[in-house]
Image (cartoon, rainbow, N blue to C red; front, side, top):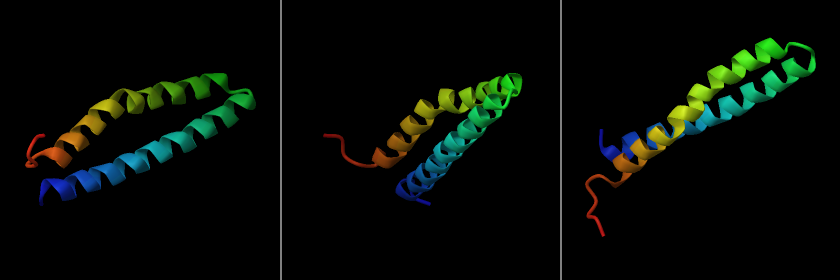
Amino acid sequence: MNNTLIAGLLNAQNQNQIALRAAVEELSNWVEQRGSADIADNVRCALATLDENLEFIRDGITELSTSGRPRT
């Protein structure tokens, strides 16, 4: 596989992860509104891992996308 294809696949996976994160956040808000603040907090803590890794993933995709290209 070439780096452009790998970067494209990782980008699509990252977009899916962002969409799933948003959906789970909405569900945690719904759960909290119904009185389960502890569960909502647990979900948000788990979602924080996605946030922490987002920049690293984006940087990796950028690096793969630009590797092999002449630097200007």
